[in-house]
Length: 182
Image (cartoon, rainbow, N blue to C red; front, side, top):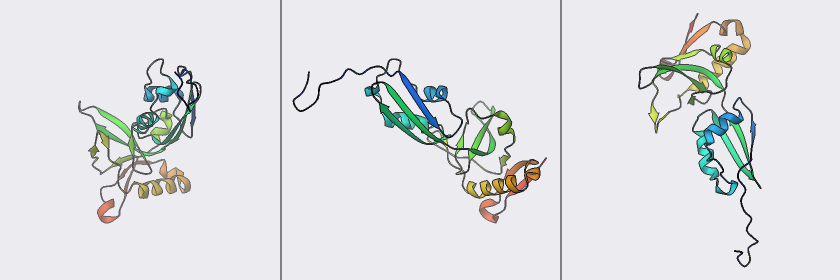
């Protein structure tokens, strides 16, 4: 029923298209899984703040903007983090898994990266990760490490290619970064 001063109500069509714009490697399939939209959901029923939080929870997504485009399109724009290093953690079943670390210290699983590119990243050592709310806290002083890694890769790629691990054990107290080579 129409209300006075308000235009006629329009039936809401089910979501029919997801349009993705990203500066990284995530694809529509990943976004669809992360959003976990119910089958037949209408554009009007979507809570964009909740959906944005789902995308950001991965850690790989630095910023996300979602826009409803009527009658039935959801546009998603992502700004992704790029990994500068990797680390290995033990999960609750004592299985080792590889995580990625971005320039800002964010630790994330990493999806859709070329495995060959990941293999070129040095391992991080000499640090203790802490969790808060199920997610790892960002690694402090990582920008200093990222600067070193970027400079080495740009100015001495032949040396950078031999770097096996970078230890942050002494960074906080002695301002030293130890590099182990192959």
